[in-house]
Length: 154
Length: 151
Image 1 (cartoon, rainbow over the protein chains, first blue to last red):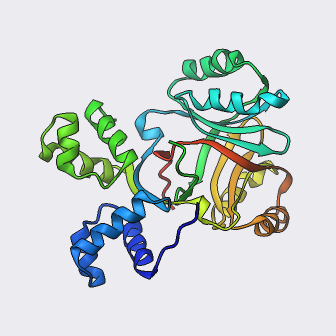
Image 2 (cartoon, helix red, strand yellow):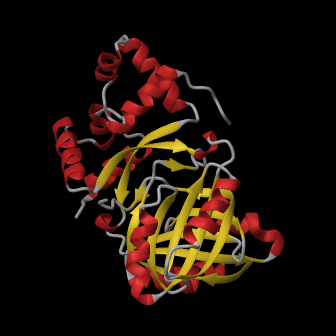
């Protein structure tokens, strides 16, 4: 849902983009507003649907060696159920229904080759309704930008 | 590498990076000083970064495309870098299997998306074949994970 932001909100968002943990006090100082106003606006912006300030952790440095962008084909009517089932797996961090040759595009992260094999050969094939799995392993990530995302599915 | 305390901190900051240190300290039962040091370490070692993520539903009619590319082998790295320089391209990776490269594109609307797919990307030298899928519905997106790539 779209909600309206005024000029002050946008200025606050810009400052949070530079430093997500900036205190209300420092934001207030920079924009020449009171700390109370700053802190009210910040909670409005974050509790609303606009944006989130979060820590993004690096897969690889957290021990996930394999990033797997996979395409999944599903038997017709079962798309939603299959998507929900796949979404419930911990190794899967993004699931999108798509138009095109594939029905679902998913991204998974695993720590070991064994875990990867388990996911590809045991866990995913056991989900009823999956017609085919087209796996791939990401060999080098050149760009991974996260300033826009579909929020609010959690 | 990260230990148990680090992963607990990452989990909490992954939901709300503005959570004050004293609250994090209380939640995972260590001192506030430890939290302060750990967060500084995680940031310095580029294990995490603090980001503002905007909700795509605030765009008018956002279009997301997942593109697999088959390219001339000798030009793979060059094309990956070229794609990375395009602001609409959000994710670029070389692949083992499926395609040579994969890219995700986010555009403000369908017209812009088609321009990027059929004009900008298709005209890159060495791109032999592309297969695009357009996002229809997003079931899961765990934004707390990413690759922190130096640009």
